[in-house]
Every structure is written in C-alpha cells, then in structure tokens.
Image (cartoon, rainbow, N blue to C red; front, top):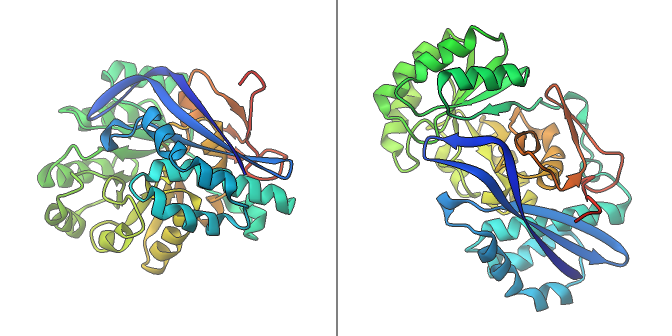
Length: 339
C-alpha cells in the first residue's frame, strides 16, 4: 500500500472550553492508504490530556512506513492485528490507519462500510450538539444560535445547576451533561438529582477516571444514568466499567479505531450496558467513519464538523441531528481538492 499523511490545523467556530482546558484550534492528522487504484482515508486528532501531538503521530506512523507500504491489504482486521504490536503505545496513530483500511476495504468490496457488516441504518440515533463552558449568557447565545434536538452541555463550574436551569428556559431539547472528571461524589449525586427534573438524559464521566471507589458509590445512588468516557479508553476497560457506569462512550482515536470499537460495542451490549460514540472534534473524515457504527449504538456525539469553522472533506451530512450518508462507497469521506 502507498501511505500519505496530511497534517491540518482547523479553527473552531467558537473557543471550545471544557472543565480542564480551552482551545481555538484543533490539530488533526489524515492518513491515506492506496492500493490497486483505490484510496482509503482515516483521521485522528491531537489531545493534550493523552499527550498526543500531530508531529508525534506522524513520527509514530512513519517509523513503520516500510512495513505499511510493503503490506497488501486483505482485511482491515488483519491489518490492525499486524499493526497493533508496532503501535500498541499509540492508539491514536493506529486509529488513523485502521479507519483508512476500513474505507479502502469497503471500496474494494464496492459497498458502503455499514453494508459490509450487513447493518440496517434505518433506526440510527441522532447526534447531539455540544455547548462548551462559557458564561451563562454566552451559553444561552450559543444554544439559540444553533437550534438542535439534543445538546451535550459541558460542565465543571461552580454554577452548573444554574447553567442547566437557565438553558432549560430557552429550549425543550434533550440535554446530556459532560463534566469531564470535574466533580466529586457529593457533587455528582446532588447535580444528578437536580438535573433529573431539568430534562437531562444522562451524565458523562462526572468524576476522575481513577476514582473507582467514588464511582461505585455514585453508581449505587445516582438519579441519572452515568456514561464512562475517560474511564473507558481501550477494550480492557469495558469490563472494568461494568457495575460503575450504566454505559460507555467509545472514541475511535482512544481505542485504536473501528476494529477494537466493534468488539467493545459487542462486549458492552452483552453486559447490558448502553453504548455511545464520542467526538475528538474530528473533521468530516473521522466523523464519516464513526457514522457507520450508528446502527449498533444507543447514543452518539459526532458533532465535530459542526463545531469547526473550517472542514477539509466532504462526506456525511448532519441535519437537525440526523446523519445522512454520502452516496459513495467506503466511509463516504473525500478530502476537498484544495487539500
């Protein structure tokens, strides 16, 4: 296969703030794999929380360029197994290659990716739209600027109940709350009780990922379902989250791509847990790949392209929360000609 890497820095529409950071630009890396006249693309993002940078991603992949370019793609799963020992310490890099391999493989089959898996997309969940932390007034403005059926509200301030109470005055949309590890046990229980009467569907990662004892207490008494994010990174974390969370949020970048994500979905379902996919603010390249997992899912947060001021690709479209697939094989993503 021929390998090409494309680094990008895309601006956000608004400064994006969660409990531990703010940023105006999202660095991304797109990997392209070519074989027998067909091309597949995949994407991954930088992330300071996990010490991931685009230069580091490129270095990790380029270290194995000779192996990748000598490899003949049979199935993406076999390629993932071949690459895993080489990139076991960098799931973000493995993700970009895995997504590209799935895109290429589906094109080789002359099918959309979900068709390769014989999935029915007729009952796909809708995506939420994220409102980052800001002043209450600005969060209301962002909500009014972007009418949507489901919002993910980033929290982790001293005014969290006030924020949800005020936002509720301006919309009847479903709310999902993401605290990004910012709360403790008492705060989580107090907020969950208050939010239940304010139209909040669930709370994502209320407490630090290492606080399993605290999560055990919260899980037993929470008025709302709890979804793991930072506590569920790779396949081995799914079973650990059972009995501490009601569901898991799978991010392809963190777990290493579609190949392990599908196994995580099936394991979580067998344990009776809800499953969602999350966003690392990817462009339409990565988001188009996530879209093909939707028939498996209960919830999804794949609003990355909506949060960005610029995009680098064409692919899925998002209209009022509904995901519309591109009329192309593979994941449906194509880089704009300018890139």
